[in-house]
Amino acid sequence: MIIAIILLPLIAGLISLMVPDRLKGVKEGIALFSTIIGLIIAALLFKQNIMFTIPWLGFGIDLSFRLYHFSAFILLAIAGFGAAISLYSVAFMWGKEKLNQFYAYFLLTVAFANGAVLANNLILMLFFWEGLLLTLFGMIIIGKKEAFKTAIKAFVIVGITDLCLMLGIALTGSLADTFTMSMISLPTSGLGALAFVLLMIGAIAKAGSMPFHSWIPDAALDAPLPFMAIMPAAIEKLLGIYFLTRISLDLFRLNPGSKISLLLMTIGALTILLAVMMALIQKDYKRLLSYHAISQVGYMILGIGTMVPAGIVGGLFHMINNALYKSCLFLSGGSVEKQTGTTDLSKLGGLGKQMPITFICFIVAAVSISGVPPFNGFFSKEMIYDGALERGWIFYLAAVLGSFFTAASFLKLGHAAYFGKSETANKTKEASWAILLPMIVIAGLCVLFGVYNPLPLHALIQPVLGAKLEGRDFAGLPTNAIIVLITLVVLAAAVLNHWFGVRRTGKGIGAADHIHYAPGLSQTYDLAEKRYFDPYDIGMKIANWLAKLLNAVDKAIDWIYEKLTVGVTFAFTSAIRWSHSGNVSTYVVWSLAGAAVAIIMVLIR
Image 1 (cartoon, rainbow, N blue to C red):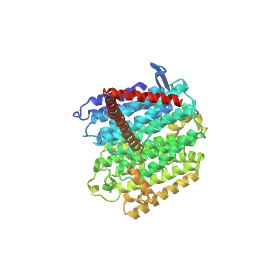
Image 2: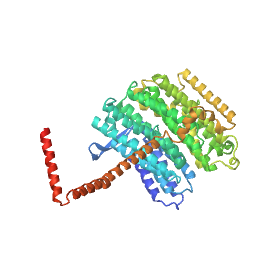
Image 3: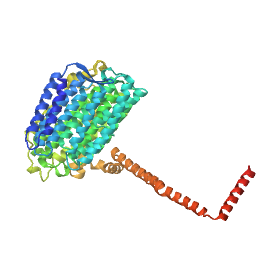
Image 4: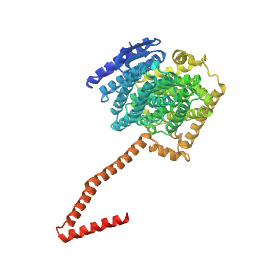
C-alpha cells in the first residue's frame, strides 16, 4: 500500500496528461477516483509502523521507506486535502483550458508529496522533493498569460533553496556516514550547524517562509486558484514543517538555548510581522490571503524553534490548523471569483446575503486564523504564545502583534467583500455544491479541532513528540489564564481599530488606511509595493548590474585584442620600416648611438 499511494496518483496524473480536453469529465473522474482511493489507503495505513529498504543506486542510496506515526499523519492530511480540492476543482476548473495539464500536475504533486513524506533516505526524499519543483512550475505556468514570469520567479527562488538542501544533504550524509534518516543523529555544532542551516533553508522555503516567499503573492493572481489551496496553503506547509520538525527533533540534537534555536525563532517572528503587515494593506482577496499564508508559517517556525514542548506541539497543531483554515479561505476566494468574476475588493461587497454558505465558511476560517476562541487557531496559537514566552518576551510580543494585524486584516476583508453594496451583488448567486462541500467539511473541522481539541492533539500531534512531551498533556483549555486574557484584549483592540478605520474612511476596504498611510509606514509600504524589498527583484537587479559589468569587461578585452594590440603592432612595424630605410649613413648613426649607450652603461656601473 505504501508503493500504491505513490504510484496511484503518479499513473493517474500521466494518464490525465494524455486525455484530450474534448473528452469532458474523463480527467475529472480520474482525479476524483485516484484521490478518494488515496484517502482510503492513507486511512488504512494510519497508526501502522512499516519500514523496508530495497537496494537502488548504491553508495548508500537505497529505495528506503518508513511509515510511522508522524509520516502517516502527514500522509493522511495530504490525502484529505487532495480529495477535497479535486472535488472543488471539478466545478471551479470546468470549461477552462489546459485541463489535462492541470490535473496531471495536481496528481503528480500528490504523488511526489507522498513519496517525500514516506522516504527514509535523504537522496530518495530529494528525488521526490525536486519533482515538486517541476509540478510547481507547471501549475503556475498554465494560469494567466502573465503567469510565465511568476513561474520563472518561483522556479528560481525554490530552485536556489533546493540547491542549499542538496548541499545540506551531502554534508549531512558525509558527517553521519549514512543517508538513512532514521539512523542520523548529529550535533548542531561545527559543520553540523552548517548542515542544519542548509537543510533548514530547504524546509522553510518549501513552507513559504520569508525571505523565500515573494513568488506566492504573484502566484495568487496568476495561477489557477485550486493551486493556491493545494500548494502554498496545504501541501507545501505540511511538507516544509514536517521536514523542519524531522531535522530539529530527529536528525540533529537541537537544544532550547542554542544559537540555531534562536535563529529559527527570529525567522519565525520576522515572518509573522512582516508578512501580516503586507497582508493588511492588500486590496485583492487572493493576494491578501497569500500574505497570510506566509505569515502563518512564521508561527509554526517560531513554535518549533522554541524547542520546548508547548511550542513544538503548538507549532505542529498550527501546521494542520493552518492547512485547514487557509485552504478554506482560498476556496472561499475561489467561490467569490467563480460567481462574480473578480477578487478585487473595490468591486466586491454585499455578498453575505447572496452567498450565505460561502460567507459562513469564510467567517469560520477567518475567526480560526485570527485566534478567536473556541476555534482551532486559538488553541494552537495559545501554545505557541506559551512556548515563546518561555524563551523570551520579545518573541511573544511579535506573535501577539501578528494576531492583532491578522484579525484587523480579516475584519477588513470580510467587511469589504461580504457587507456593504456593490454593482454585481444583486446579480450574484451562491456557488455550486461541488464548490461548497469541500469548504463546509474543512470549516467543520476548524470548529471540531477547536471545540474538541483532544481529538487532533491525542490522535495526531502529541504522539509525534513521545518522551519529549515530558509527561505533559496540552489538550483542553489553556492553562495560562493571563495569556488568554491578553489574547482577548488584543482581539478586542483589532475590532476597535476596524471600527475606527471604517468610521474614518466610510468603507470596509479603507479600514486599515490609517495604518497604511501613517507617517513613516507610508513610505515603507510604497517601497515594499514597488518591490524594493523583494529578494528576487534585488537579486535580478544585482544580476543585471553584474551582466552589464561583465559585458563592459568583455568589450574592453575585445578592444584590447582587436584594437589596441593591432594598433600597437601596426605602429611598431611602421617604426621598424621607417628606421630600416636602406640608407648606409642611417645605419652608421644607429650603430654609433648604440655603442655610445653601451659605453655609458659600462661607465655607470
